[in-house]
Image (cartoon, rainbow, N blue to C red):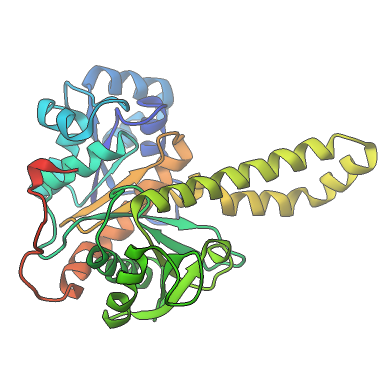
Length: 350
C-alpha cells in the first residue's frame, strides 16, 4: 500500500507533514509513503524530525518525489493547477492516476486539490460533481458524516441525491454502518420545509437506493439521529466550521472557569480525564481528513491547520479508503445513466 502525501500543503508544511508521515502511531504496519514537493525542503525536514537511529528504517519506506512548484492557499484553485503542473498537489494526484500510489493526502488549498483530482484522477462516470465529506462528533461512538462541506457552493437537486448515495457508501465502508440512515439538512423536519433546492431534492433522495429518513435540523446533527447528512458545500462548510468553533469555545470557557477558584481547580483536576476524552472526540485532528467522494481514486483533504497528528490520521484514513476501495464501491453503486446534463467540463472546475 502506497500513499502519496503533498509535503508542501498546509499552514505547517513541510515540517508537520513530514513529521506526521513518518510517525505512524497505529497498530497496523505503516504504508509506503511518497513525499511530494521540493526535495531539499523535504530532506531538511526529515533531518529535523527523524533521529539518526531511525533514519535508515524511515528511508526504507519513504521516498521523495520532487515537485518544484507550490500552490498557495490564496491562489485561485483551477488557475493555479493549470499554471503549476509541477506543483506538489498536481504531482501527488498524478501518482494516484498512474497507479504508483493508491491514495493521496493533502492539507493544501482544498479547491486546488479538487481541481487537481479532477484533472488527473478524473470523475467517476455518471457523477455530476464530487463532494467533500467530513465526520462530525456525536453523543456516543457513532458519528455523522456530513457532505458536501466545501466542494460545491451551488448545487442542483439531483447532485444532492448523488451525494446521498456516495455518503451512504462511505458510511458502510468507512464507518461500519450496515444500513446508514441518510437525512437532508433543512430548517425543519417536515418534507415541505426548506429552500426550493431542498424541497426539490427531497423526493429524489426518497427515490434513491438508500435508507432515506427525511429532513434533519441543524440542532440534531450532533445527536446521532442520522449517519449521513446531505447539503450543499456552502451550508455544509458553515455547519462544520461552527461545530469546530463551538467545541473550541466550550473548552476555552471550561479552562478559564477552572482557574477561578481552588474549588473549581479541584473539580477540573477530577474531571480532567473525561474532559480530555471529550476533547479528543471533537478534535478535528483525530478524524484526520475529509474524503473527496466522486473521483476515481482515494483523495483525502486534511485540515489546513493540520499538525503531525492530523497528518498521521489523514494517512490512516487514506490507507483505509484504499484498502476498502471506496471509490470503486461508489462507482458500482451509482445508478447507470448517461453523463449528467449540464456538467461543466473538467477544465472549468471547480
